[in-house]
Image (cartoon, rainbow, N blue to C red; front, side, top):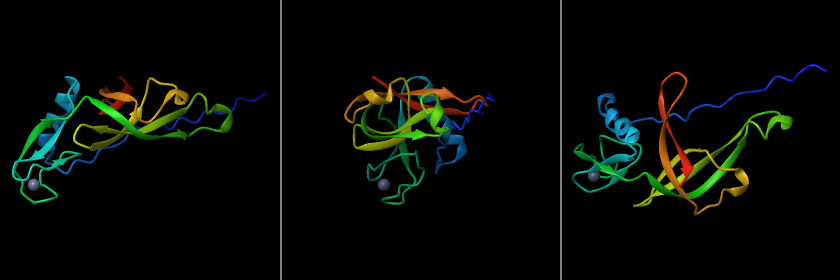
Length: 143
Ligand SMILES: [Zn+2]
């Protein structure tokens, strides 16, 4: 019997930063050290994610980096099936929305837990990863 090709379409979520590229290293360096940071407007205190140089609320461009993680709570999730039915147990993944203190919501892969055991309200932590190409990204793990 001929072998069915396995479809691998595992991709990293891309994060679009509305911030000068020279500033994004703050975010990734913090993540490598186990911290999850984003920007907070110096004027009105609005916290944005992804990090933003211009405040979407008051339009000022003065901001500070604030530590919001790495611990979050699972708000909701979806299990994505990307392979033919016979391979789903090997090649599905979970995309989760985690909520950090301050009601900040972040979308990322959830790894390290069986889909059956995933429940809204469970504690997560965010962790740095690098793709095969060396691009940094982050995932949620059960905490
Ligand atoms: Zn502001």
